[in-house]
Length: 294
Image (cartoon, rainbow, N blue to C red; front, side, top):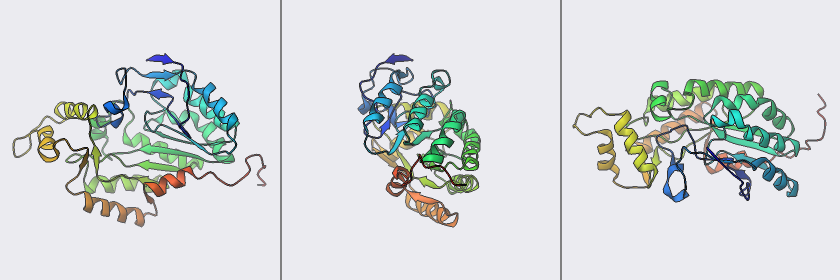
């Protein structure tokens, strides 16, 4: 890791305290060259003045809103255990009576349940958790350095018990790997059992562009070396099927998306993208300083 003093932190209501990640997810779009990293992705840039910048920004805001983090880089990478920058930022959000939402794959978020619960009691806190496969063995192949799906499910259950609403990012679905009805059934079942409010799914597929494409293909050769019936590797199958497309959609995308929609309706789980983002960003119309009557 290396430390920097950032000039700003909010753009306009979201922030990335860290730049880079050590989770090692094979599909990560944040590796793409378009984001202009000037350092190795695993050499994590730490915005050491993030809490001070956030406090200065919130003091100036005339209207309270939801403050988000984790859209580019996970706020609960292992370094956070030591540095506690995410925790300090949540404390500031709590102090100034804003709402908080974060996206993570890590169970380290449990450490900050005291603050998230307090924020949610006054305004609103939403924990967003990425789940891509219900199979822990497969999970360790595609997301090797982070807690498995079964542990993330426990985090979602703990959120539900604490009254903190949750959203699951069911993305990406990797063609020929986890784009199956069985996987969709498994994820929706976990979401239903954990009382998840909504699922975000951008379609059955992933995006590949310069930077993350090369990393993804190298991971396919490393983690899925066996040849298919037609004697081509999984990497070769991707190249043959998709070429250099940015959008890499499963051949069964339409049918699987329809199946996901049916299961979500059956389990009363909100499904979407823009509609779910709108719900996440809605700031509650209540006075955080008004004491609870009961």
